[in-house]
Image (cartoon, rainbow, N blue to C red; front, side, top):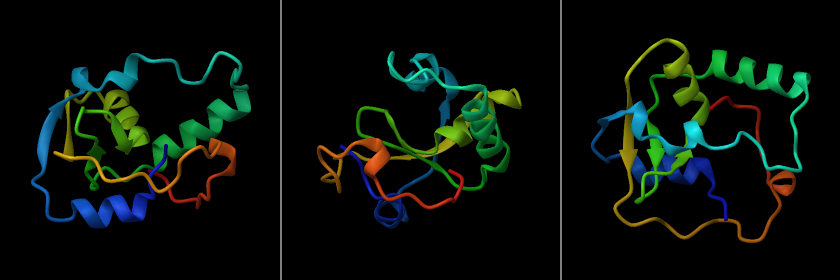
Length: 114
């Protein structure tokens, strides 16, 4: 399942912003890739560039159970700079996904850092 980020931003525009402890972001302690998708150094460097370019003025978007729906590069940047919290908005009820059963490589992406 995947969500269109522009739609998530529109849906959360009026949500209250809260400061979430980075220790509560579960994805920080989960594998970066699947077992059969070992990243190359070039891939890691590309992600570092996205982390550096991430705009921390945008709140991270969390699902109702606290998973990061948008903003993992902003989360990584916050950790890199030694912050202990990050600004976030969170759904009480998750919207329907925009894509179901679509491989990540087949999703339409733009080059905007998140």
